[in-house]
Structures are given as structure tokens and as C-alpha cells.
Amino acid sequence: MNAIHQPHQNTQLTTAKLLINGEFVESQTSNWQDIVNPATQEVVGQVPFATREEVNAAIAAAQNAFISWRQTPIQTRMRIMLKLQDLIRSNAKSIAQVLTAEQGKTLADAEGDIQRGLEVVEHACSIGTLQMGEYIEGVARGVDTYTLQQPLGVCAGITPFNFPAMIPLWMFPMAIVCGNTFVLKPSEQDPLSTMMLVELAVKAGVPAGVLNVVHGGKEVVDMLCTHSDIKAISFVGSTAVGTHVYNLAGQHGKRVQSMMGAKNHVVVMPDANKEQTLNALVGAAFGAAGQRCMALSVAVMVGETKHWVDELVIKTKTLSVNAGHEPNTDVGPVISPRAKARILDLINSGIAQGAEILLDGRDVQVKGYEQGNFVGPTIFNQINTEMRIYKEEIFGPVLAIIHVDTLDEAIALVNANPFGNGVGLFTQSGTTARIFQNSIDIGQVGINIPIPVPVPFFSFTGSRGSKLGDLGPYGKQAVQFYTQTKTITSRWFEDHQEAGSVNTTISLR
Image (cartoon, rainbow, N blue to C red; front, side):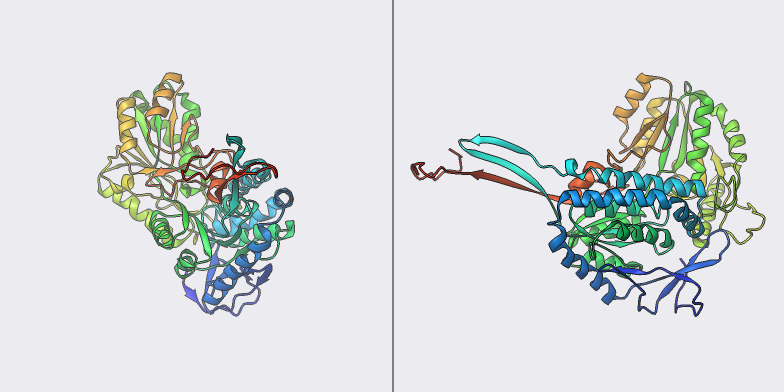
């Protein structure tokens, strides 16, 4: 993590503003962190660690705005989302440039980051049908029962560095279109592209106080988790922080969804389409420099596919490692020197524990970007489940290969791993695919798809050690998460109707 310090005197640096009650304001804090381009170590901006008073002001603005926002017609909320998706589409290129500068991913991947978030905004435009309740008349004589899906109040979101566009767009559009107000805490490592999206939301017509933004670290996170006015918290990030958020917020009576770490496997069957499979493995393992919670970490090669490994290495060697804004870059830098050091430590542990290293990316050099946080694609072969490179989430461009003889062994291996974010299977057999999808204990399954992130009509459904809370982000589950069900049972009497006798039972007559 970058050091916390007093603000620079350089007034040319971009500073991440706070959004409080509709106003973008400069924080009054004395604690600032540099926003650093991972490819160059150039300081591209600064982010404040908001004061306690500023966080409280943002929550108070959201609480006040909820009084009127919850009464805002649903068509009005939908129209704001329609305007927002149009603005995001029009500004995607410029947001992607900022995203690449502060996060490091390639421009193509940055645009993909924005596009996947945009799809959630587009889905939010359907809130008129998504937020419908249920109705049955005549559950008893003259008695009707119906449900309302009503907003919770002030909700909060805490987002990670690896998707500064997509994951904030998982959160605040669905929350506010359901009638809630929102306080967003972006990653302190790359908040500038997130703030560009927030500015577009304000431009689209989100009223003052409905969306607020604060920046900071653990102190701000803990304030959001414990403040009495916040009703729900959505989190995406590491397992350690996600567990802390879930426990702390839960202890304070909040609804929590916490999407956390992963160790994603892909099982490769001998009947798979070889070229398509190898291309998919390389892209899923090394795209975004492996900094995806759905990145491929472990390739489980079944039977004769053990002979495909050499070709996998050859394909991987064709990838270009460079700064994200450079043309034809495949693998950009990782987010920080600290992240690079952790990845290198795990690679070293793999070698020390006896794994066969087929491709070593530790000493990759990028001309013109010698100070960048680069780790080249790295491939280990013949690993076992006791190695650190198997047990721990690496979050870098490292692929571990393990060999088994049968599909049953592969399923048992994957199911024994504590994480449950995603898994893929490559096969040409429908029977094999059906056995796999029914037997595997992972929340998201891809059949000939290595990164099975669902489209927004469905929800992100990680499981086990990758998720705490029973409802996932976006899709129908997000509407359930951001609303509470109120059930109403009613009977209307005609003026001339006789009262009848007193009923002392709980039955409806």
C-alpha cells in the first residue's frame, strides 16, 4: 500500500473528491495517499482518507435524501438509469484511459471492465418488472394478500482495486434504482475512474444525497459497518477484509453480501477441442495480469491432456507484457510493488516446495517501463494440493497445473478446495458436462467457458469460502438484497354487511 502522508504542494495533481449531498468537495483531511501508475510509478493523483465528520456527513445526507427518494416514482428512477447507461457508453473511451493509467490493465480490458458494469446499469432499467410484488385475491372470504418490495434505506458499498468500473456499477445503480440511497467507498488505490462514473450518475439526474462517496481505509470501512443509519453493506475484495466486514456489520444488525477470494479451477478432458481450450486457458490465467477474482488459477489436466502442456507454454510465450496503454499489450503490471512482492514470494515458494516451473516470469523486463510492477506469465507443472501456490490465492499471472487420471478425481479435487467462486470444464461430451455440473460444489460453472461470470439477468453466485451472505450482486438477487418484503393481508367490508360473531381463533373466515 502507498504511504499515508500530508498532501503534496503540487496543485497540478488530480485529487479524488468526496461526493456529499450532491456536491463534489475537497476533503479537509490531513491524510492523503498517492494514486500511482503501476507501469511507471508516476503519481497520477491523490486520494484523501476522509475524516470521521465527512463520513458522518455523507451518511446523514443519504439518510435525509431517503425520505423523498423512496417516494420517487419508479418510472423516474428508471429514466435516470436510462440516461446513465447512455452517458457511460458515450464516455467509455475516456474513462478507460484513466482506468488504465491508475490500475494498469490494458485499454481493451479497461473497456471490458466498463462494458460489464454498463450491462448491470442496462438491467437496472428494467426495475419496473424486477421490483414487482405478488398478489392473490380470495385467500379467505373477501381477504386478499399481497407483497411489496420496499427499499431498505441507506446502503453502502466497498469496492476493490481490480475492477474500479464494473464493481461499483454492480452496486450503486441497483441499490438506488430500488429506492435506497447509497454511500460508496471505492478502492483507495484507483478511485479516479470510479469518480468519473459517479460524476455521470449525477449528470444523469441522481438527486443530491441519493449517491454519496467517501474515500479511505479501514477506519472508514469500520464506520460504514457500524453506523446505525446504514442498513446494508455490499463488499467485494479479499477474504480477510470481506470476513471482517461481514462479521462487524452483522454484529451491528446489517444485511451483508461479501464476495471474497477464490482459487478457480478449469478441468480439461481429453475430448475437448484442443486449440480452443488452450487459447481459453491462456486468456483466463493471464488476462488482467491474473488480478481477477474469477481468474484461472489451476488447470486440472485429465488423462492424455498431460501431453498438451508444452503447447500451452508455447502459446503463453506469445503474450506481450507491457504498459496497459501500449498497443497490443496482453499482460499489464500488477497494482503495486507490494502486490508484486507477494506474487514473487509465492512463485519462490512453489520452486522451494518442488513444483516444476515451465515458464518463469519473475525477471521480466519491459523496455521503457523498468520501474513498473511487472510479473510475466508463470506456469508451474506437477503441483500438489499441499503447496502454497495451490492453497493461497495468488492474484497474479501464475497458472498451476495438476494432473489426474479421471473426471471423478478432478471433481473430488475441486470440491475439496475451500473456495467456491468459479470452475470450468472443457469437453465435447454433453454427458460429461451434465455429470460435472451436477456433481461440482462451486457457485458458478462454465462449460467450455473459463471465466463463467454471468450476464446481469442472473446473479453472481460464488459459494463456500468465496462468499458470505446468501444473496449475490446484480440480477434478481440484488433486488432481493436491496429491498425488504412487506406482506399485507386486507379485507374490506361493505357498509351494509353484518358484523357476525367474534372470532377468537387465528383462522380467516
